Length: 245
Image (cartoon, rainbow, N blue to C red; front, side, top):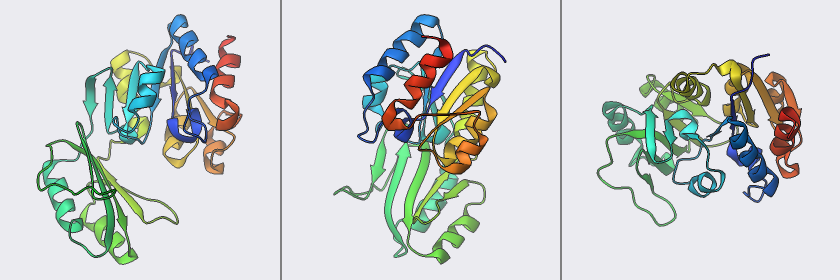
């Protein structure tokens, strides 16, 4: 097995417990990884803005946010896998005034926009839009949006109205491959943690893939190991055992 040179972890329901907190044990493992010279990265579906408090607390070397739409280090953006202006314009025109669309969230490189919690969507947006998420209230509208946006990655979630639109390269594993090339390491030298469907490719493709006990069954099936759940410090415990801290 290749020497592990990077550890990457999902946030929600993986590193974070059910109260959306980072445990003291996890903070300690982060310090020990730094002392060992091992790169630590976060890979999350959250935007940079919504994960800011956790980034500040964990101080990762790199952050893969928006499910791979943006790769950053400190305050520097390294790679942006955004939707083109033409693609965004067509998509927004189709959803902005539709009775078949509920809540809308639009994530740019520098700003998040939404039409809920008292907010109103603006007429103009920044040039680089990373992803659009919206509530699609009818199956007919979902089918229409899929057909209209074949150039985009369109993710529909079982039993939910939410649909996500992004660049086809905006997946955690694609972004991790970009990051590994940048850091001059192989994905075989990465230890990855996750719990949900958007983590599957990353766990299957890395040198060591670890799911937490609370992960969905299909994620567990592609993992090399299963650790304790997110409320039992599963990630911290595995890091401690694996590296002998």
